[in-house]
Image 1: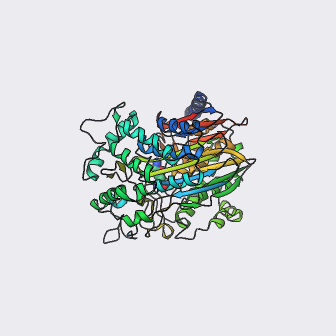
Image 2: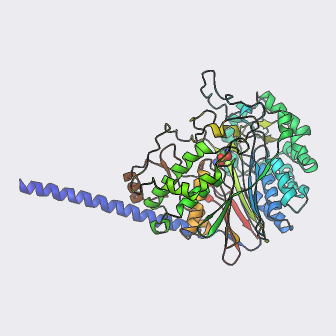
Image 3: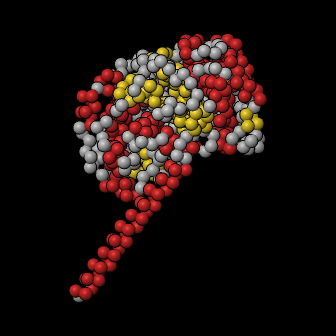
Length: 585
Ligand code: DON
C-alpha cells in the first residue's frame, strides 16, 4: 500500500516537474524569439536633415522632396496629407478630418483641430429606431454616417500660419500622382478587392475603383476626377472644396444617399487652432492633442500616473508592468466615457483630470496583486474585425520644426461613399459620437452626454498626435491609427523609449497590449508576452485575449526620435507589411 502511495506521489512529482520545465522552456524560447525580432531591425532610418514617416512610400518621398526644395516640416506635412489622399485612399483623405500637433524649431507649440463636424440637421436620435434602439450600421455605412469634412480647411490653415512655400506647390505632387496613376501595392489591391461589394452596395453609381476583374499588385490606378478636384483646391484654396463644383458634387452625393450635409454646412466649416495639452513626464515635456480628442488628456493621465510605477524594474511587458498599465487604462478610459467631448459644446474638466491630487486618488484604488472589476456598465463586445483605417505621419526638418498629424475617414474607406465626379471618399466619423448612452461604438467605446450628437458638434476622438521635448529641445514625434488603441499604443511607445531604453525602431516593433475599461479584458498581441507572464496576469484575475497580431486592424506607429548627436531616427511600423516607410535625407 505504502509503496503504491509512494509511486503515485513520485509520478505526480514527475508530472509537475515536467510541466514546470516545459513552461520554463517555452518561456525561454519566447524571450529568445523576441530578442531576435528586435535585433533584426535594431534601429530605424537615420538622417541628419529631415525625416518623414508615413503609411506609404510615395507619400514619404513626396514629403522629403518638399524638404529638399527648401520647404519646412509644415510644408512637407501638407504635401504628405494630399499625397496620401491619392496613394492611400482607404485612410489618407480630403473627405475626412484630423489633428495637427506642432512644435517649431524655436519652441512654440500648438495644435489644429480639423476634425469633422455633425451636420447642422443632425440630431440625437438620428441612428435610433422608433423604440430607441440603434439601427445597425446606420452610423457606419452610407451618406448618413458622414461628418462635414475638415481636412482641406485644415491644410489651408496650416499653410497660412506655418508654411513657407506657395500652397499650389504643396498640392501639385498629389495632382501629378493622381493624373499619372499609382501602382497598387499588394495590400491596396487586396483592400479594393475586399471592399468591392460594399462599394457597389453603398453607391448608386459604380465607383471608378471597381472593375470586373480583381485588382492585382502592380496595376496602375489613375484618379482622374480626384486630380480635377485637387486642381480646384490648388487654384481656389478652401473655396475649391467647400464651394463651387466640388461642394455641389458632394452635396448631390449626400442627398442621393439620404444624408444631411448641405451647402450651408460646407460653407460654415472652420478648423480651430487650440491650445495643446502640455504636461511633464519624467524628464520630458509632452505636447499632445486637446479635446475634441481624448488622446492628449488620456495620454498625460497615463504618463503622469506612470511616474509612480517601477516600470524600469519590472521590465518590458512583464506581468507586473502589464497589470499596472491595465489598471491605469481602466480608470482613464472610464473617465473618457463620462467627461470628454467637444469643448465647444461641453465643459471638459481638463485641469481636474490632470491634477496630481486627482490622479493620486485614482491610483490609490489599484491593488498590485489583483485586478479591479469594470462593473458599472455592462461589458462591451469585442471590436468587430472589420477593416479600420486612420493614418498618422510624423515630419521633422533641418530647423527642428516638427509636425505630427493623425488623419482619418474613421473606418477603412470611411462611409464607402464616393463623391461621383469628384473622385474622393467620404468619412463615417459620425460613429465616433455616442449614438446612445452606454452603447459601444465600432471600437467598443461607450459614452454619454458629453459626446452626444448635436448640430455642428465635433465627435470625440482618440487620435493622439504627440511631440515630446527634453531639455528644451525636440525629443520625439509620435502617433498612430488604431481607434481606441491609439492612446495605449502611443503610451507604450513612449514608455518603451523613456522607461525601457529602446531605440525608436525597437519601441515601435515591440509587441503591444491593450485594455480600455470596457470590455473588461487585456488584448495581447501574439508574442508580446511570455506564457509565464500571461499566467501571472490570469492569476491576478485578468481576462486575456490573445490576438494573432495587431497588424490587421490596430496600431501602426510612425515615430521619430532625436539622437544625442542631433540626427533623427525614423521608425515605421512593419506589422502591416512593407508600405509604411521612414524616409530621411
Ligand atoms: O477619431 C478616432 O478616434 C477614430 N475615428 C480613429 C479611427 C482609427 O484610428 C481607425 N484606424 N485604424
